[in-house]
Length: 384
Ligand code: ADP
Ligand code: MG
Image (tube, rainbow, N blue to C red; front, side):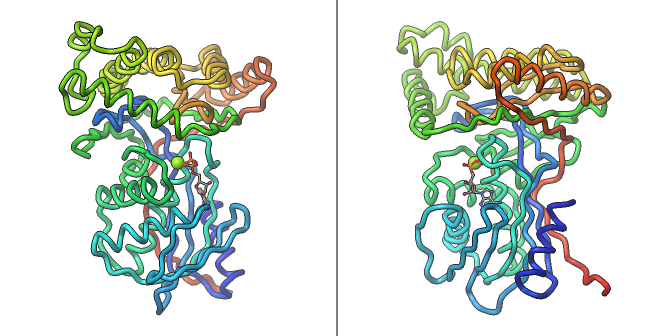
């Protein structure tokens, strides 16, 4: 709640009045199913307790004025003159542009943004910003909140305005997250089934404090390999390929492209299995799937890093850990661990100690249960 209160406080300081609305837009972590989304496959993310908050009120004109505590930055633009600038304004103007293109009538607003989602850590602060902004427009314009439509619009904004060729997962889980549940999302149909995280478990995000750099090219390269493999087998996407077919036809692919495809095909299988094991309450089996996923990303898809490997090993050696793996796009950022709730404190201390001993780096542990997706509440006037 702290960041929500901070957003309201910042609004009062800047605009001299109470805001009308407070929006919460969560970060996310993916339990399993990495680089499967743009292959029309399956992912199993959850919305986390860390979130981006926007305190706002509607404006009578078509101006959007925002201030973000991140870097103490202001942005202002007119809905009738959107322009492709850089920085965080690109996310916001991109969402506005795509909403307009989808036929929404937009009203202006002014607001303050405070977030406790670390940026670039693989927790998708960018999707939280996009969906938070989409929600702001939905409330003030107004138009109904359709999580799938808003996720697709936000994804387009990130693809076309920011130039990040991301899949749909981040935006969809941010828009549609459920308390206590991860969502098994089918990235082809954009439908999902909830998977209950057993009450005895917590998810611990382990930020390595390393950040990915210059990875757009690596990401695009992986995507190209996946497309190449799919077309070599005459399928629309790797989602349509099973392991027996891929293995049987491996000579159609270069060794590198074969390994990329193997990761995606087996990762899809693991993701489906993981949702089933969680629903059965089988945390041990779930942990094993996470370990296999990490090895596949390290050896076949080659998107891990020494820091991500060290953090995963540190977690697996600490008490209460069922399983751990790197999460997100790769090359830096965070790992995710599945941990017994009553042992989380000791797990975090030991994991970070081991990690520091191995790398000399200071990591951060963020324990969480799954939370609701982007939401809006009215701000009631306070007394005095
Ligand atoms: P990730 O989504 O993994 O956190 P990205 O590089 O995709 O990392 O997105 C981070 C970018 O999103 C930041 O550089 C900034 O432009 C924007 N952003 C995220 N949170 C905020 C915020 N609270 N205020 C302003 N911009 C933000
Ligand atoms: Mg992002």
